[in-house]
Image (cartoon, rainbow, N blue to C red; front, side, top):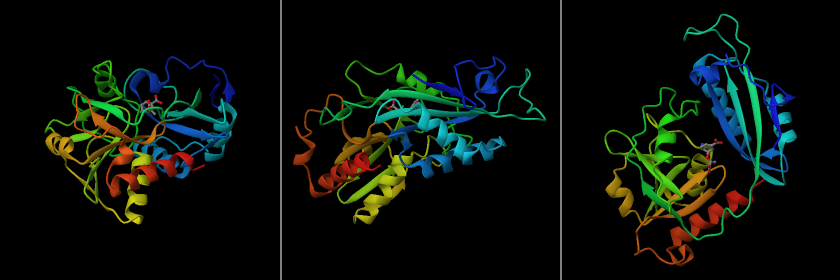
Length: 273
Ligand SMILES: C=C(O[C@@H]1C=C(C(=O)O)C=C[C@H]1N)C(=O)O
């Protein structure tokens, strides 16, 4: 695995880095096609939104892209880009001079992501906290880690709720619900992360003729949806079924016209360079 810190190969980070001390930074997980990140402009926009909100100077886009092309492990792989505020003394006060740390971690080759027709989802007890940087992917992910620890042996994802029992997302991706000809995305205005695939799929589904909207969604409504989909950079868009649900079709391809359309959109997303 190749790791680059500010463009230099190696995995040594200053122990005073504020990313480590306080989670003071943002990250993106990217799907690389031949070293080129899929949906880069969306990842870059979200990364910059987080950096701007935190007042961390933007790192050069060209340097990020060069780093990512250097860590690509296979024709299709995952990589992670982290930007922190850099080194600082003890205490939360932001140093007068900031030199961001840019970390790029090459990941595993992607394969076997689509072996099974459905992913299995359970419901986690750990609630997702309010996101002080709405939609952004900051480095403080303790709730996701606690929720991830709750997964049962046959789970592929765990749904996280907010304190009012509204569905927010999965522990490591977003949820989309199909209700007839309507695609409903649980809102991420206050909680959760505005997923790059989530946004792409919503736009694509709207162009294909589905009604698409964001909403506050309770767990009952999510369970009653005609179909549930999960999205993130690794899996793209995949149909899911609730753990213990025996009523769902054996094969998602036997579902409705809207289901077929969503599967087609998922296929298109996966194939897209
Ligand atoms: C893509 C996945 O999860 C995302 C990536 C990370 C990570 O790179 O560490 C963590 C959580 C998610 N944002 C996945 O399917 O695991």
